[in-house]
Length: 68
Image (cartoon, rainbow, N blue to C red; front, side, top):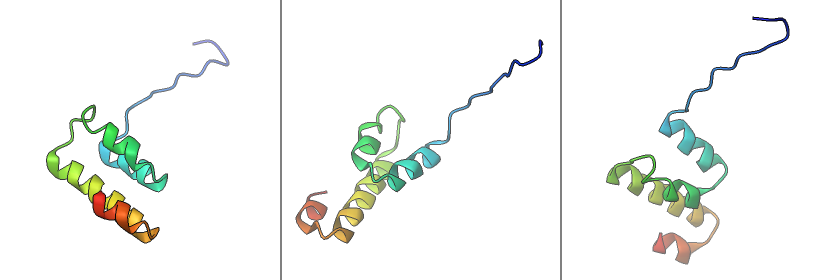
């Protein structure tokens, strides 16, 4: 290798870590839209809905929280 060249190794983060990042950004819609791509189970999808509903409730968006 010649001087000044850098090689990067990229790897995909685990689904749990990706979901955690989306939760921090409160981007639940994106998390739900990626469920099929990530091949999440019904239990995991339900968990995203629950987390989203809890977030809406904390923001006093009671009607939206109930719908979610």
